[in-house]
Image (tube, rainbow, N blue to C red; front, top):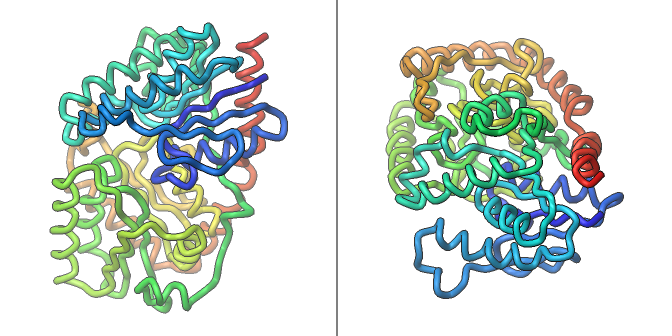
Length: 394
């Protein structure tokens, strides 16, 4: 059985959870499955991995059209595969075309949904309508749709009611506990601008509407004065959201000390060290299908304070491995809190509760690592994914 996995992201060009997922899934599948990877970007030196650049004629085109230019090349090269598996809308078009062209099953994994990310129109303009069309077409025609959480499965069926629920399978994201574990290195923490002797709240994520960073900046104004806020935030969707976050950070820095913004991509060891030093990790997302970064924090022994939305409640056990912050959201696809001030206040109160009891925070962190070990191993995720492939080829 040869499976061609299609993705925008693949090491070393990884900037989000989908790229991490693809890399780990490929590693876990390879001992028992013939896997070929086709990814956007510059040539890679890994065997059975092929890279694709935007055609020269489309380098200045709308990003959605540039994406289609890559998808056409991928679809052609899938010839000879028994099954194609695509990740995110960027590669869904290639997977759908490969299904039609080569007459093979197409599996899609849903890491996010375009109808629930309307702010992408800020980034893509009219291309957002194109990306939405690609995703809808591919999902509705796919032989199987893998959701990374039960919450995501519900969102898929709500967004695309024509999909047969029997074709939607839940397979969670996972975590490599050998790579992600506690790293005690105060020197690295200090080099990153963080005081290892003060409590810290750590955020890691792209600067995009779904991550809820502006709400966190408001909530941070209410944290105890000794608490540091550490933001590992980069890859902004648009200049506008970047400017909004810059204003919020500057304003916060005039009011309190210990506001650290790291906008470069940290090495895996640096990030593990920072997470290990955190009093708590925070995930203030208004849209989050699961959140691999929450698993990374748990694996490093950090309790997680996360919004009770999407797949986060399937990862964070409230009062056991962290805390869930309640949120009531508008039903317009944006995830906007119905009462933003209430959400900000609840977020601030919950963070204050956790950082004010470091002993309990450590216990929740230890429980989080154990939960990551027992519930989210890549071996079990690969086995469930392989079983879906086999059912389609039987």
